[in-house]
Image (cartoon, rainbow, N blue to C red; front, side, top):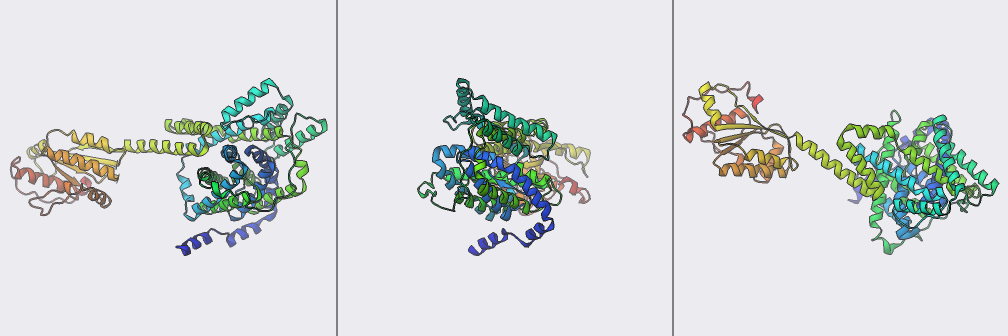
Length: 577
């Protein structure tokens, strides 16, 4: 057992091909890493502040988690660090458990991600429907934007763990004592970023706007533009002093939420990177492994939980990155800033960072994708809206669970509607018109098309037991695509009810997989008829065989007169299975 686990972990470690990729075009990767670092700096600071642990936590996360996820992750292009989605989850954890609780949760989540990687859970990301992802992203964007309202308005963050309540209280405080300077900085930075991105997408307007706001605030001595505050000049020494062993049980649920979000967002971001390039394909299990190591290490240096960052990954791809060297360069440059420019970073106004995150939230909303999902089907639109509302009103993990549950229920409903139960005419075959008429008076054949499972089975039961007064029912089952235990039990119940009415039920075309399910619930014996000429009770391979057995039964019962044996037919029987 331990040997298999060790082999599995060894398969997730970096390989020689990663080094080969790094050597291919290092100059291009170094330039891409520089561009990503410029974009990531204000985001790391802003998300650190928003999480409640401070700007230094955001920088530590970007450096430590960014480097480890780049080195051990499953994507050549992924850039990891603090993200808005994770911030949304962390804020209530900080409020309930404090900073040490967040660090402990991050460490626990990292261990869970490594375990998921070892269990090969990454492949299940492909089963998350697109409307859930779009609704999730829309809800996150709304929450990130609302979280910035207190800093953008220049008011102390009100108490509360519901973002809508906190936002409303912040607006009330602003109306009592307006801080137009802070609001001006936030609006100006957001406007420069949004307009600049349309005008010159390659220019890092976020860092330019933050620098301009900082210079103006310092030069004018604007007390209303509250700065970030002092930052440590360097990363703290790794330590486990924050670990609260006594609270591990109560922190399990938040840790599961953080791990689930880190897995979902990281794999989604890696998939986006694959879609933006040609020839790149990430390893989902290895990506979980890299994110797990990153989240184990980041708390040791005072960092918050991290995920793959879609916006920074997109910048990385667009600026020409081709290997992990770009993401590693981004982390190294941020480390230089932490050690060499901490005093300068501490002057940045909080309102300016709020503007950066407001613009980021707006840019997260892909109007075209939302419009396409809303127009696709009513089910897609419902799933999207429900997931977005749940993200805003509840929390991200519950939102994804609700979205997946509703998507699954609607998908089952759609599949169940495909199941058909149709009466089909008996083949005239070698029978005379008179004989065919007699058979049709006493034998009815039904063809079951599609799945016979729990979502469709009870409708089948109602239709089958509503059959009129006949002597024999033939069930043509070769077109049953799938059958579960519920479907088999419902079929058994229907056959028993028909038999109590004196109706013989025969089956044709049962597949081996269906036979196993029917036999497990005792339904197969009910579909076997003791044929006077056929020996032991059996179901039939083809429908003509079942019709001949039904005729023999009716002859024995005296319902039909005995006729000379018909010559066997072979050419068309396959069509009547």
